[in-house]
Length: 172
View 1 (cartoon, helix red, strand yellow):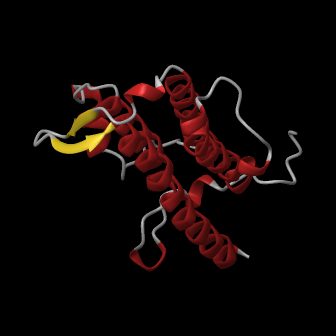
View 2 (cartoon, rainbow, N blue to C red; view 1 turned 180 degrees about the vertical axis):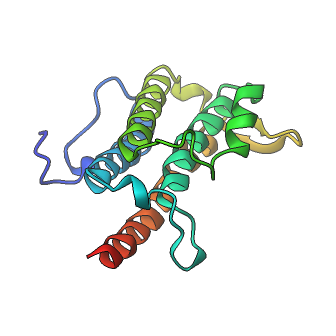
């Protein structure tokens, strides 16, 4: 069943995703759908606005992409590279003066696709394998990192939904 009137988790299993990782895939796909709908035709002039000092829509889009990338890197047992660390430092800044929401949405969509590919290649037997997070190598597991990537992305989607609604209401 692929009827979009239902949330992703109610449409059945995602092909090629291990059973235990279905909720992670569902959450990432749900976020992608909502981000695409929410940001369609979003005005570039509002992309970096911070109503009441909260994070801008541009930040949320860049952060969601970055957090998925970083957490899945740790889930693979790798450390962040220089490009990932630089991206982290610049998430609050526009990547260019002419940056449009659609560009950030496309980058987010690509990151979700990469995450789904990683999920499909993840062996369920490895889900409880220990993984270190960050330079301090704080303890986690493959499953912990994958679930956190999904829930953290959903958390920022919620913030993005509210921020966009506030910005659009001020424009009307």
